[in-house]
Structure formats: C-alpha cells, structure tokens
Amino acid sequence: MPVETRSATHAPSMSSSRIPSGPRRQRRMRKIKDEDIVAQKTEVKMEPEVGEKREAPESQTSKETEAKKPKTEEADTDSKYIFTPGVIERGHIYFFYRPKVQREEVHSMDDVSKLHLLLVPSSSESFSVQGKSEQSKDVSGADADEMNLVAQGADAAPPPESTTTDKKHFRLIIVGKKKLPDPEHEKHAPIWATVIFVGENLHDLEKKLEGRTYETKTRGTRHTPPVRLAGRGVYAIVNCRGNVPSRNATHLGYHLSHPTEFGDVQKALGIHIASSFVIQVKNPKAEAQTGQRVGLPKSRRAIYSEDVMKHVFGRGEKGRSSIGLRFTNCNCIELLDHEGAELLLIPARTGTEGNDQSLGNGRGEALEEVSRCESEENIEQISKELAFNKEHFPAEPLKGEWA
View 1: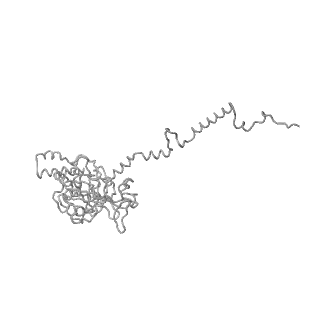
View 2: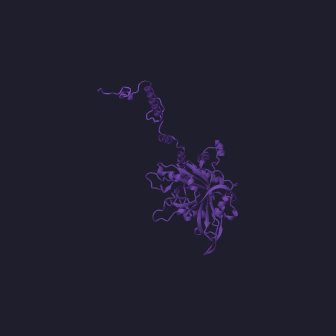
View 3: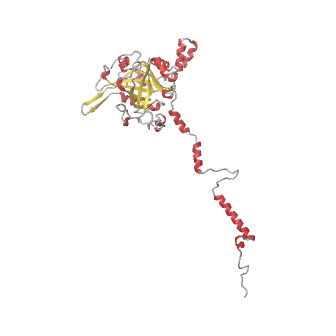
C-alpha cells in the first residue's frame, strides 16, 4: 500500500521559513534597517565619525569649564593681603596719658594710669611740595637738597588735618607699662599694645577720653580724670622688604610738631621728637606660651576674617601649625582696624636720620618738614582738629609740665 506523503504546499522547508523570498523579504529587510537607524540615534556614541563634533560627558565638561574659569576673585584676595613694600598709611598721631582714679593732679609717673596712642589716618592727598619745587628752580646747594628729600618722601607726608569736621576715622591704642621703650637704650625690650577703640566720629572719642564719675559698692563714688595731651605730630606706617621674606618688617615712624621743646612729661613717657618702631600683629588664635601671663582673654581678642587668617597668618599652610604664624607683619592696614588687635611694638631708631633708615626714601625728612610747618598751630587749633572741648582737657603737658 502506497505511503501517504504531505504535499509541498503543506510542509514548508527550513530554508523558506528563515529567509523569506520576494516582496516579503524586502519588507523585512527594510524594517530591520529602520530599527538599526533608530537604535543608532538613541544610543550613546562611543566613537564619533570623522568630521563629527566630539561631545564630552557632562561631568567632564563641567570640571574642565571650572578649571578654565579665571580665578580673578581669588587673585584679588591674594593681592589684597600680600606684603607690598611702601607706605600703607600716614596721618596724625597724638599721645595721651590718663591719671589714676581719684588723682586730679599728676606729679610723676606714679600718678599715671595709662598711656594712649591715637592714630588719625589722612586721606590719599599728600603734603604739598609743589610750591617748594617751583621755587627750587632758583635755589641751589643745601636748600635744593632739602627740597628734593621732601619731595622724595612725600608719600609719607600727610596733608594738614581738617578743623571743620568731626567725621574722621581713628584708632585708640593703649600702651603697656605706661611708657614707650627707648630705642637708644632698650632695643630688645618690646612692649605690648592693644587697639581698644576704632570709630568714625570724634565726639565718640571725646566721650571715651573725658573724665567720668561712677558708683562702686565698696568705695562709693569714684572719679576717673580726663586724659592729658602730651604730644602731637605726624606718622607713617611703611612696609619694608628685607633681603629674604623673613626679614620683611612693618615700621611706624613719627615726628612731633608739639611740643618743640621737651619737658619732664615727655621724657618720663618715653616720647621722642622723632622715633620709629617695628609693628607685629599677634594671631588671635595663638595662646600665651607656658609661664606667660600676657594678652587679652579670648572674648576680647580681635576677630579676623577667614581670608586674613589664611593669607596673612598662613593658617592651613603646609609646614605650619594649624593656626598659622603667632605674629606677622602688618601686611594690610585692615589688621589695625579691629578692636582687640594685639600688637608688639619693637623699638627701632630715634631722630630724623633714624626714621630715614627705618622708613626709607627720605620719608624721615618729609615727616620732619611737615611737623615743622605744623608746629605753629596753637592749642585751640589742635582741639578743633580733634573736635574736643579744650576746657575739658588740660593743655599744660604740651608744655612739658605735669597736670
């Protein structure tokens, strides 16, 4: 009996099921091609074709952009606090002493309670030497040399102090030991000083320095006398570059206009006609060394910005302690504009020649010239430039007499 078999129409072959023929095959191939194109568009391209713009991953792009971004803000901060040689401030300086409580009269240092320095910075205007320079065309010899020295150091010479405004920036500094050390005999005897008051209104300063009466539980009514003015002159603060960075120094030099002749008061307080000191600023984070009882408590110390602590004191720099330097130069005058700033005054030199050596570029001569021109001012003018009531502050010490 014959074996029944399936017709070709009912038994499709393997080859026909895998590779369709004719129009069907063409449609399937087109579909596959379209799917490949869509996949290529949605897929992240690992290697772009020749001529096609490369696109970096988003994270990499942001990092590169940040790296290429100009660091102008950081550079400005660095330059603001970097040690730059030259005059960083000039102005007028005043020396006051305050008698002890209940001492209405002072006869010696035993009756003195405190010594204050008052710094009143000047504007950017300088002491005018234009008229002197014009006259120098017809002079020669020593006079011409003197004029050249003044012109050379004019950046340290302040303009005359105004007597018509009470709005002036000032710093009141209290000096330790009630007297200044003598640069001639006490070169290695630095003293502490502290900025105790910073302001913009001279009437606030007057209230700080005038006398006051107060009550105590144990001693009853007590009276603190007003301060006495013992000296007035001009000053300049100059950054001087050393042969190595560790030899850089900040100098404060002054030359008195009042008094022109010294008495017992100025000698006892250690005030000279002209003198200079090296200024160093203490790191407020630095504690006193073992065995020392100096400096302010933490609550009264200056609070500097993070930029100052980093760029001036060097906090966080490799090779230094976590707080940075214990003392530093006055890289920027901002360091002195904080109440509670602790200073170290190191005696340097005395006299005009000494100031020339400390401040450089004939600045000692310039300060001397300005103080000489201003020495003709009377007590009333000095009181006006400080906006003080002259009746409240005895003037005898300017003549060298205790009061």
